Every structure is written in structure tokens, then in C-alpha cells.
Image 1 (cartoon, rainbow, N blue to C red):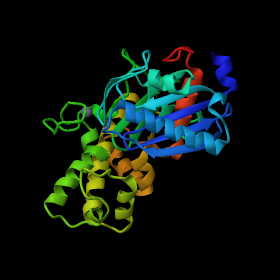
Image 2 (cartoon, protein in one colour):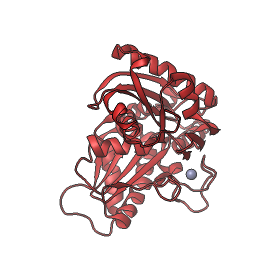
Image 3 (cartoon, rainbow, N blue to C red):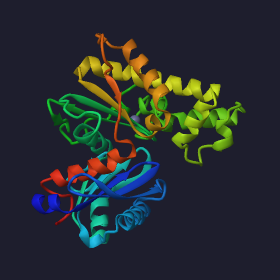
Image 4 (cartoon, rainbow, N blue to C red):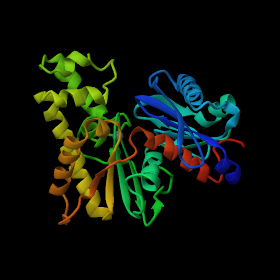
Length: 331
Ligand SMILES: [Zn+2]
């Protein structure tokens, strides 16, 4: 399989809680076409498959390619997953339980499918093609709807006993904290990603707090886009800035602890929120990380921005699919 897959075109799919990106990718990791749609996160697995297929059609059209030219499909999905069976077990940010995503896509697109964790895919691309090139010890922290992570040590992606290692978002940030989408209480994701920000913004909106945000976003029923937060930042909205700084503090303090634990070459800070906010967010997270690092390097920064932008997920999903020895579905 590897040789055929390496020669052909791969569809890379980045399934996120907010958006679904699909790209047609050639053997040199060049993106030939892209499709991007909102993820119907609350409508179940079949609706998600339909959106992936629509986005794939858009990407193929832009690339000027046909489905028959695709030799392999790589999907990065929120988890936890059963990667061997190609099943999403559940997700904190999508209403999907025990859904055989790989098999359903294989039925529709007629190419073998490799399912992998979305953040691990993005981090893998950053390692091989982006900000982490040449480094052997890396942590990825991707902040978007949720907070995902990935650990690479001694040049190996750490998968752990069950394949689900790296869930930075679900280490505890606050004892007796609120309940996370995953079912646990006090998870870092609730204090350092959009899922948690959204709850606090919704509460503030109902309490009549004044903010530019509430001209753009009218509560929990609507997706909280990262660009709304970037717009509020650029307008100097004090409420949103204070909330973002608090989120950065939670995130950075925890990342400082992970530096103490693993002494990585770098932590790559990515994800939709990090991308949209850019420099101020990076600086706040760096400052908070230093507060909790046993040894602060005199030169250089440990926390570095992701370099591949929105493309990390699709590139990584395609790379991992090409390198997989056994796909999640029949060839
Ligand atoms: Zn959690």
C-alpha cells in the first residue's frame, strides 16, 4: 500500500469542532486544492460525513482532479478514537458516539481511509514541515474550540497504551471546577479554550455586561469564531481582553509545568484561536509559562508559533495516512 499511496494524491481531512477542511495533496506535500465548510457538530456522524464529501468536492474542483485520482484518505478527528477500527468513540465538542467514520467515508469515496487524532496530525505536520523541523522533543498545544495536545519525545510521537496520549486539554487546571464536555471536572480545556470562554461569555451576556463581542455573537447557540475575538482585541475591548488574558494564564502556567516534566526543545502553539490572535496571545502564554518554569532559558523562546496555519491538519492527516502500514478500512 505504501508505494501506491506515496505516488498518488491523498485527500487530507481536518475535522474540527467548528470547521471541516479538506485538501488534495500531492506526493511532495503540495496542496493542489482546498475545501472548507462549517462542521455540523451537533447533527451526528452522518451529517459530518456529508460535509466532508462536500468539502472534498470543492477541493477536487479547485485542484482540477477527479475522485478516481485519489489513492488514500487521511482524516484527523477529535477523539478519543479507536484508530484501528476507524471509529470516533466520542468527542467533547461533537455529538458523535461510537461512529465508524472511516468505514462510512470509505463507502462513499471508495479509497482506503486512515483515521488519526486531529491534533496529533497537525502537530506531526508542524514537526515534519513546519515550526518544529529538525527538533526531536516537542509538545504541541492547539487551542481552538477545544484544547488538544501532542507529545514527541526522542523523535517519536508518544501514543501511550491506548493510542490517546497527549490530551493536554484534559489535565486538571482547577480542582472542583466546572464539568468539561468530556465528563470530567476542572479540565484545562474549560479555562484555556473557546469551549470554556463561550460559557463565560454567555453568562456575561445574560448579565448585561457591555462588550463589542455581543454585537458579533449572540450567545451559546451561535459558534464563537476566533476572528470575533481577534476583532474585539484589535478594538481594545476590555472585557474580552481580560478573559483572553485569563485563558492565556491558565494555558501558559500548565505549559510551564509540562516544560518542567519533559524539557522539550519547543512547545508549538497552534490552533484557530492562536492563529487568529497572533502575537498578543503568544506573549501572554509565554509570560504565564515562564511563571511556572523551574529553569527559564536565557536565550530564545520555548513556546513558538505554529508555522503552517490552517493547513497543518490536512497536511498532517495526509502524511500520517501515507506512513500508515494498515489503514482503518480495507484497501
Ligand atoms: Zn475534559
